[in-house]
Image 1 (cartoon, one colour):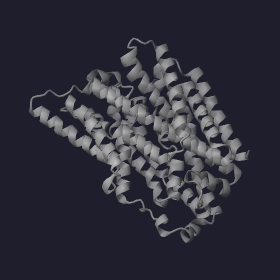
Image 2: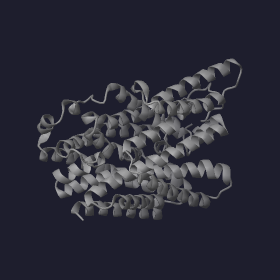
Image 3: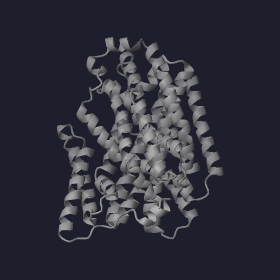
Image 4: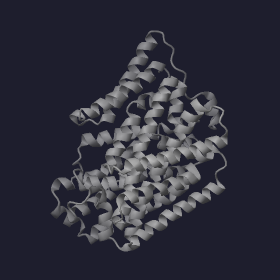
Length: 474
């Protein structure tokens, strides 16, 4: 085992220690476990939101894409995420005022049982794939550093993430996320110029790689615009992101924390892309998911390499735990309490929440053993959960004349359109999630207009005066 591995091992042990400490001191009831008692301040919220979203896709995935066909322009994957979260900031106050626990809960208030069931299924299914992507990312780092058998590393990584998520829920995740985001931003920012310098510098990359690999727009403006839309849609409807907004101290904190997170992500964006280019220039033919850890191992001092790879592990563990907790929340509140045991005690909710985390951890490991592309799994997850529900959820928060059928059929039509567009190979370079959301939006407003003209009453608003007062707003 290398010294780098022991740095990573020590980091993982610290995360479990934090989980134990938080579980003992901070968790008293299910709301503490699922929503951190709705007491996250701006810095804590920005940190936990950024750490949840700067995961395997934004580290190993970006480096792998830079190593592959996207080149330097792979950095847009993260910058687009920052822009997407900036746009979600304007929706954030409505999310916090809803006093909800899950995304399907809000849809149920406005559009009824069928919309709730469909959205719950889509959200939970998507998060299994998203969690698997993060487990793959964590395992890729440890596999490169140790040379250990990849399937065994996947199982170990899944067990560690599941363990510390089980211990303290969102409160534990929020505390560890502050550590994660420090390692991610500071560690990577310090390490990237060292890796670049020791590998021959920027001039060496320019001289070695094809001009297209060094282009800032190689990925194409259509894809960049599509990524921005994708992130806006998936962050505004994704449980692991929205759960952070629900957990903010108030609506103002939700908006401020979101703004802070967007700035952090935009600044970070191109760092892993540069490291991916270094790997391509010196190690052609390796597995793309191994680009970042390989470059760090060869061109950074041991301690720096340990910090870099610990920061990647931090990012992936954080995203995986956020996804697990999101599934737990969705199952507990939208399946168990709503349809199986409406009179469940707080203790029962805690027990089932932890059982759901254990189950999703096991399933994510099973999916991860297939060793799929990280970004491909993430885009699949984003498309499943956001394409159909996007219009009904986001516009349903603010549009008073939406009808029940408009919400329901826009969810169905958008989801079917996204699947069909994906199967057709995404014609004209338009991403499936973008096409599905466009169909969802058009059908949402068209059906609402037609039904209102026919005399159908609008669906009741999801955010009532009672919700506003409960959120602390008069």
